[in-house]
Length: 176
Figure 1 (cartoon, rainbow, N blue to C red):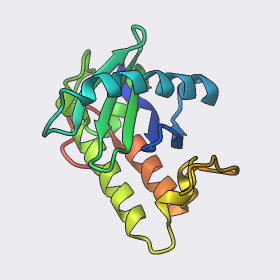
Figure 2: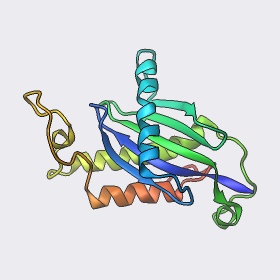
Figure 3: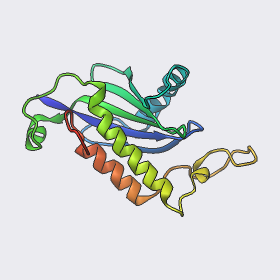
Figure 4: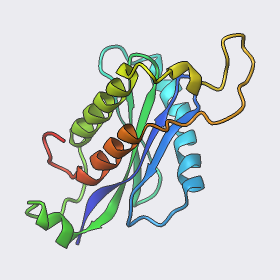
């Protein structure tokens, strides 16, 4: 039996532009498939935004099929974080090696809070870097014209931290 695992982590900017997409094995879907999936969650963010007041955790955004489910988190700066969980993702042997006693059938929204909090902390650390300019990653320039070039986050430290979070998470983990 397999344990749920993170298949993809997406960081989406205020202008709904993808800032970072990280894929995790054993899922074999392409980067384009996950990019389309992340884009499909933007409508759900907008619909829930009007009703959300205090908590940043938007919980389950959509269940794509019997395997994939998208969960969302919204920062106070308007950056959206999406974690796509593969319910049949990690072989049981690997999960047991990390201390899981039995395979988990479903997820609670609270199971992903440690991962989202760790992602938000990594993003805050990125923003604290004096050489990182978040406005340089927006597709719109200050005068309203579209920018050409890369709008992806290229910080190696941030990318490594996202990878660590995606690989370390499993249901029931309290902190990452």
